[in-house]
Image (cartoon, rainbow, N blue to C red; front, side, top):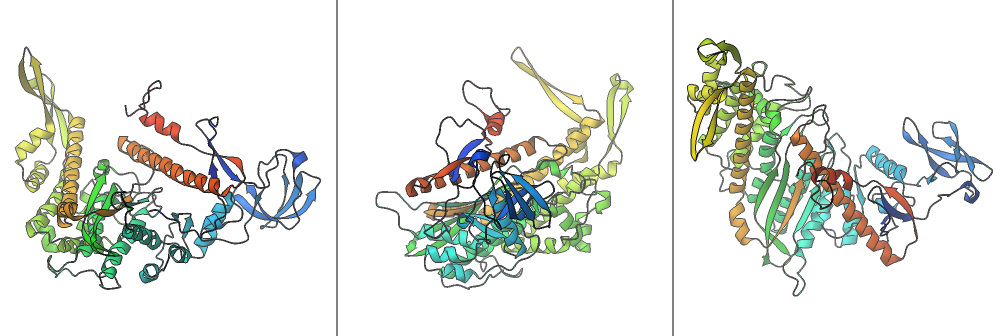
Length: 582
C-alpha cells in the first residue's frame, strides 16, 4: 500500500544509478558517502575505539573495536571475541562502521551496509521483535515460536501516518495503511479509489502463511470495529447456522480449509504453502463516509504442487488433509469411508507424524470451517470419500507378464484385485472400467479423412505412471472444487457487482531447491524471481526519487540483478535466444 511508516525526515539508504553504461548485472546503485578509500594513499584516518565490522570466515561478519592505526592504510581491530585482526584499507573496498543502536526502521540507521542490516535484524530478533521496516516495506523474520500480537485498537487509533509509523512494526500497520488508503477520496477527474495490494514473499519457511493470516485477521477486525462491532476476534462455533455466520468469520475460516488441502510439511517448513494464493477482499466505500462496507471476498490460486500427492522427498509429507483425516476421524467415519492405516497407504506412509503438528486438532478445525461455510452433509461425505479413494488407489500395484495370445504383448494385472475394487467403488467407478483406463491407452489414427481408434496395452511401469497421474488429476480437481466452493460462499459473484475497491493479499509460494526439481518447481522458483525483480524496481526507484528531491551526495556500490536469470527462462525479445518456456 502507498505511504511510508518512516518519519518525515529519513536518512538516505541507497539510490539506483541512471547511468546507461552500468551493464545488465550486477546493477550499480548509489549510497551515501562513507569511508571507502580508493587506494591506500587516500585512506582516511580512523579514530581509535571506533566500532567496525570486519569479515569472518565462520560468522561472515564480526563486530570489533579499532585499537590502533598503523600508518595510513592498516588498522588493528580487537573483535568482540577478544581476537586481534589486521585490516588493510588498501585491500578492503569498504570499512563498515557499526551502528550505535538497533532501529525499528532501517532507513534510520546511521551507517548502511550488509553487516549493519544483518546486525539490526539479529538484535531485534533476539529481543523478540521479529518485524522491522525498510521504508514502506516490512521485513518479518520468522520467530519460530508464538509471539503475542499487539492490540489491534492501537493501530486503528493512530491519529496520523506519523503516529502509525511510531508504533512497533507489524503486519497490522501494513494492513491499516492499506485500509486508510481506501478511505481517501479520489481526486477530481482521477477515477475511482485506488485498489490496494499487499505482497507477502520470501523463501520457504520464512513465515509467509502466518503473515498473510495476520493481515487477513486485522482487515476483517478493522471492518467489524468501524461498523461498531466487537474489538476482539470472534470465531463461530460448529453449531451455528450459515445465516448467523458473519462474512468476516467466513473469510477467516477459508484459511484452515485451504491450508489443510494445499499445505504440507517440507524439509524447511512444517506448514509450507504448496500453491500461490491471492485473496481479494471487496468493499463498498460509498455506503457511509469514512467507513468501508465489506461486501464479499474471493480467492484465486496458482500452481498447486500436484506431484506431492504421489511422491514426497525424504522427511516430507503429503498434504495435511490426509494425515488429519487419518488421525481425527471417528471409528464410525473410518469404517464408513474405509480408511487405510497410514502404514498401508504408500502415498502417505513416509513421514507420518510431526511433533509440532496436531493432526487430530487440524481435522476438527477443518470440519469446523466446513460448518462455517454451511457445507452440506453430502458434500462433506463426497470430499472424504474421494480422499480415502486416493489412499486406496496408491495401494494398488500391478504385476506384468507376457501374453502368448498377443504375441508377447505385456499383460498387466492388479496384484490384489480387491484393492482396485475398493478404490473404484470409492470413486464411483466400475472396477473393470478403472482397470482398462489404467492399463491401456487409446490411439486415434487419421488417414484419408477417416479416423480409426484402437487400444494399446501399457507395461507395468506405464500403468503405475497412469495410476499416479490419475491420483494427481483427481486431487487437483478436488482442490479446485474446494476453492470454487469457498468463493461461492464468500459471495464472490455478488461482490463483483457491489464493490468499488478492494484490498488484495498475495501469499506466494516460497523458493526452494530440492535434490530433484521438476517442472512445477521451476515455475514456482521463476515466480519468486519475478517477484524479486519487482521488489528491486519498486524499492530502488522510490529511493532514487527521494534522493533526487533531497539532493543527497552518494557513491556507487554494486547490487545483484536477476534479469539474466529471468531472461534465460522467459525471454521473448527479438534478437536474443528465447527462454526455456518459449
